[in-house]
Length: 529
Image (cartoon, rainbow, N blue to C red):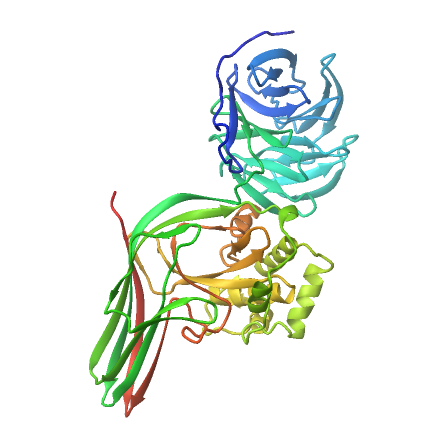
């Protein structure tokens, strides 16, 4: 049976000359049927499965014409893959995998799927890969009999399509509306792309780009995979933050001197200060610590109790979520000398020469030389061996790792220790945080890490936030940060103004029986549009 249908809607969404971001749509082709699932690229045309019609259609993606059609061997055609001769398909209703000779329309191979709900299928060159929606797994199988060679957890809970391309497995997830680039050796998600529609299904690889079929839009999208943009920002939030530090003084002595040191926030790739910072009172002076962090210093003398002294820093902010697209093969190996000097050095809380730290690095990193994979392997180790728990104090990295529990600061110290011991420059950043509602207050704050990759610069890594079950959620914290933060501080260790604190640090000298209690609070107020 042959059909000749033409559709006129071929929409170009990326104009010539524009800088593309991974995940951008370069072409959208409307499909002449309403239940598209899988897609495969045969080198000239796309094959698209229709679940309702139980058909495979060969599509010219330039004109939108249906050039040919054959009957599906299953009653629920889902995934499609082209191996150069045969068109492979999955049927999740019967847990079957088929191979069809498109020249004759005959089914020449039928094997059992590795699990109960095979959705997507991909051809690697020798093996097949199948993503299973029922078991939430991805499996590499022998195409002759379906024997499972390798299996790992799917990135998220609703995998639909899969394809092999550019050295990665790519898997779409309908519920998260994302497409994941996966390391086929480990199953770890390396790249996260936003899906173009709300019901992403089939995937195919075409000349360095992804083809994606969307079941809701009844469309075939062509997506940019790798281009000039190293990151994207999204989900902008505008707010005013009033960060106050109050010294409450009691007793019958005197505060001879009091210094309240506040880290001064600056613009970052996903953070823009709107207008000047408003201080009350005005800082006594500004200074910079050894990490280059600007500090507002408030100095007071002769404070007699009972009394309180407060300083305020009010910031108007536009912040965004950010996601980096770090391709390990694009990460350089030459680290600038100034970065090496500052961010590979030891500090008291890192203790990178400790035998326990050295052993972890040897066992986890082994002979790996790529900076991305060193940092990523250590990240996976940390989230696999740590549990978030506020136990009081900030212990050194060996103590924290042996104990297996820690706060966000202790996660950060531990990760920095492991990275520096492995030769990966690492530092921490500190932030004031939106807690739930847009109008909220924060009195506990948050800290995470950044690692330096030549060719990319400083990339955020939040091991605390990445300590999740799903590979997609883990990967989101390696190269991504939400829009809930005002980053105030970037530092590599102890600071002459902040010590090991972030956001602020206070010191004082007293006489007699005099008590000073500090309270630090950040009030967030959304900017009304």
